[in-house]
Image 1 (cartoon, chains in turn red, orange):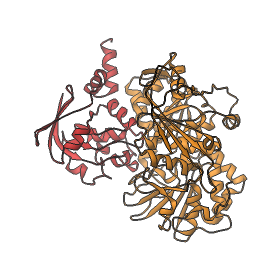
Image 2 (cartoon, each protein chain N blue to C red; image 1 turned 180 degrees about the horizontal axis):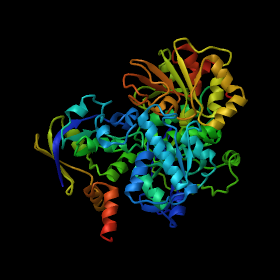
Image 3 (cartoon, chains in turn green, orange; image 1 turned 90 degrees about the vertical axis):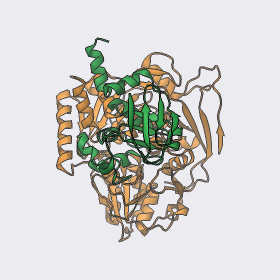
Image 4 (cartoon, each protein chain N blue to C red; image 1 turned 90 degrees about the horizontal axis):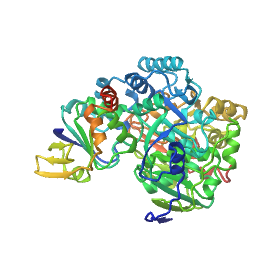
Length: 166
Length: 432
């Protein structure tokens, strides 16, 4: 699977209140949540993000609340994947569970600049910066977790396995 | 302060969390193994349960694994501030009724006080909750951790959860906290020291005479904020105080867990707390910590005492001691949210709440209060809030143009009195 899009850069410790503030948790509709995605970090983000775009951030992305609305809002906003120096624990697990691809890569988080065209090869764990002609490694993702992402999240993954009798 | 790291030898000694995960997966496990463990108790709140209920249905769930081991709590937006939230609350009530699980409705309190008060969780328990501060029950020698809604749904159906056994950082706190310095100051200091991701993917174990000397209320405060250093859990050993506290709520027997003398720790950090000053976390990061003396004089327009961190009886009593017979500064709104109905009533019986109200406090429904920005006191643009909560992220309290300072109940009460951040040691000469 290849994810390709324009990079939007954020700093370190982007918390789940910045990703989706609790004042918008009066709905669990992904499309509604997407309208406020990253709003407290960049108020313009929901308007300017394009399908396929990639969020690139510093360490500890997704720290704070356990709200699964955070990866849901990012996914529903059309973001194809998130690259960060590191992820907070609950966000990391939630992202896989709802099928948002995320990649840990300190070198990519350093090297990529806002607006760069980026392509991520999920299977090989390679991140290409098409604008700068650079290539970075991502921390490998275990096979079964890649399958969860490919299925679109844990629910579909389990359902498929049940269906196929595995 | 001293820091020690060591390479793992051939010893098989276990930390608290390795022992609890071993007992719940019926095998001897150590850090970095993946285990599937039995869960003793599951909790969801009104921010996260609606998504979990949807996931439960999409997974084809019919019954929950054990209705007696599940609680749903309406505390984040209680009573409901708008129609959208009302619909989510209704969904929770209907689910709870259909599945026969306990629902704590509006006014009963904040989940992390209600679960301990339920008597269902104690030493050796394994708990998951769809709330990041589920780590609070580590104060009871339980492994409890926050999960997302999909994980919660899987747990509700199966009563099981997969975990990566975490490494542990040991925090050894020597000495005795000085007058006017509290558990909140201690944990803020530790977070400032190791930073917001200093314990990511790891467990914290808190030990030493300063932890032993804390009340159970204080221990809950310290365990509660483990997640603010990224930790999966914040654990303590059980002692006579733990058992006496539990005996108020249950006669259930638990299995206390002690770490082995040769347990392996990724890191051991030692502190002498005897000269610690009151601490404040400045906007907009919980690890942006400084001594109160660095920010004394900063004007505040709103002061908040409550939340799962500091809404317990001892917290309200300290604030009442400072505010008794005095008036909150005219430029400050003081909002008080008792952590549970039980605490609310106890605070009335002891005259604590009357003192706070006479001083000018607005008391709101037991629950999360204004902490998470859904209701009960959203600050205006440019305003400064001083709060006993656990998070000061930008926008946390509902306005991204406001600033939140985190501090102990004593510091918040003293600041409410003067209208600016104030060192509580001006009012507290000896610890109560």
